[in-house]
Length: 417
Image 1 (cartoon, rainbow, N blue to C red):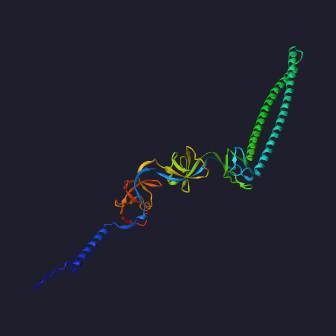
Image 2: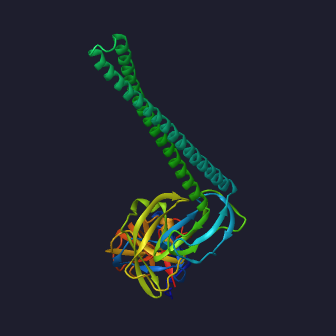
């Protein structure tokens, strides 16, 4: 009697066949995955920063440091060089205009003053001698003129008398002609004497004028020399506070060397250093703000110094409105200097991603939050907190803003918690 043998569902051949097919599928799937170019990397969520894209107020600004300075500073320079002989006040003293600060000693300058004084005295003495000589010469010329006048009168008297006698035939022609010649001689002599006296008067006046001009010039030089010696005492030119004084007794100071400064305590300004990169965008009127004692105060650029030193240039900023109470000279302020007006924009927080991407792409988190994939973007303006998104992202998107340094060329990140 025959017995029906029941066929087995899972034999070795069938298992091997199924395993082979499964392996082939896995191999093909892996090949397709790796040939697609999308390399993946597992990333711990706790080690990255995920930020949300938002739309909000954006203003382009740069953080800068400013130093509080007096509104007006008068520098004290040595008008004349010399050795510091005496100090009347110390650094920080309150000064009134004209108060002495220090005295310099300059032997050569003082000797020059003494020589100039001697020269002026000599010129004055010579002028007096010349004036006396001129007066004596004038008196002599006047005496000569008096003699000439007397001789002319006598010659005129005799001439007229002889003329009358000659007409009456009381005297001869020879005697008349003699008196006539004597009279004409005295007339010529009078004209010559008058001409000499006139020339002498003009010459004397010219000489006196030259002497007086020379004396006046020498007096001006003497006054200038006295002023130079007087400048050896350095005085306050305005009311204020003496600061940055750099002079000690016995120290030599050259002409033009800085001795200190006087701060006029009528107000303050802020001196700000800015990177030369921003020079084309900085101009008078730009505004900034800073926080002081839990309050915000505004500043405005009043002057731009375009000279660049060590890659930086300076601007002066003025307080807008009330100056903060308690602010002091030399205090450092952290200022937000605005480079644009406030506008609405799509914003992405700043982060380390920019160093690897240059702002051309970013890892965007999927809606389910399990992966992050590479997305092309375009960024615009920036400030210390945000980049302005021009395209590629919208409000509500989430992106990785931390550093991408260890991601290499990965196209997709698997976010693991």
